[in-house]
Length: 604
Image: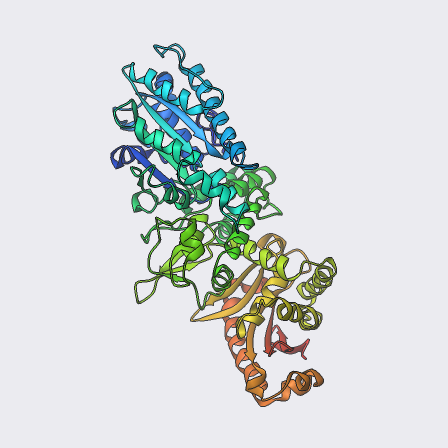
């Protein structure tokens, strides 16, 4: 059986009638009916929320009753449908289509225009079923909304309202105005338009004909800020039974790869490597407190699968450019109190962020005035999809971590842009990096970090403490998911390597080396030396210092153990070079490198 993928189109009808790949989530319909009449479901952007709404729209739409068997008969819900299928007029709003620029009047006008456009589409679809005309007012979309609800109430059916990306334009306003909150406050507080819209939704749900509401969005921030106007919604985002309402299970990804393998005539080993690649770059999401299987980002997975099917080879770019703007979310977090500190902790798995619980009700004011130990910022990063829950510590706190390498890349790029914004620095860094990739020679890289990177940290106060400073420097400068599977604190048997760079399976034909790096740090105070004194010493003199020598020996011992484990795992295809690096203050770097167990490459 052939397989094909519909990438980037959240149209359930087109997906099913066109015979495209679909991970069946219709089994959740019955439990969603029982969960409540006004539901809020939050997931990161581009995570499949719109397709869920499209599925619900097709399931409940009275105008599509004749299509039910074709659309659902072969799926879970089709085998045991609920009595409510095809029993609703369905209205859909999409707030991502509302422009967020201009003053508050312009935003209000854009929202009214959008609601009016949705009402015209609604009337067009149900013209033959509506017993009376719907009244429109050009500058007030809520007039048509109320009129449409009244018209539906005069039929044997009720209305189901679907609101997609409820917080989209409000989030854009919030992010664009990080210091002053005037426009955002006018949207959500007092008689702000967004609060007014949801007050109308609430009012029309009180026996007026609006029976069910399903809302999607990214975070609870906006809903919290309008809560006094809409305090009837039930947030199901963290409930374990809806953990996989969006996202793919690994078994579903593996099944799709098997079908691609059959069409492309790929070997079983090729498919095993492809699944490993996808797991490393796209898997890792957990929503809520359960310990169930991790989920794949569906948009990224479909991007890879579609490209893999077309070319029978991996895509050159692992990050779908449609998700590249998520880096703006990290930039926004960095602008908030304690944001930079949290980003740094996220990149250090040895000291990850910890929160007592995921906050589900917090507004902008909470984030701007939060103390460091409050959970708001970490929770927001989970909702945005740039952190996820990786476990619990022995004090029952939630451990947060970066879900996968695609998201790690966004962190690294954000730091790289902040620390090395100049073209000249980027070019020198690039040359040193490619030289290292191919030769294993660390010298140009260390020269660059000493002469440029440390200086920028000093000037911009981007310092991190101890060994993390050294590790961060190398991670930021060396990061490449085009050539490598890169990981910091890679678990190897019972230890953790600081930075591993294993060549991507599809890149082994190029002149690249595998690398494993271990970092140590000594302060000038440890060595009882001044900055001037350490700068005056050559590297061999620094390496001869007893404390430095001891750290190098410790790192080399660790690397030797890691090498054995990696070579056992990868076999003869591994071209592994190991590097023990010691940072001395924020002034100097010394290292020792080995290749194939033979010491001496690039020592200094």
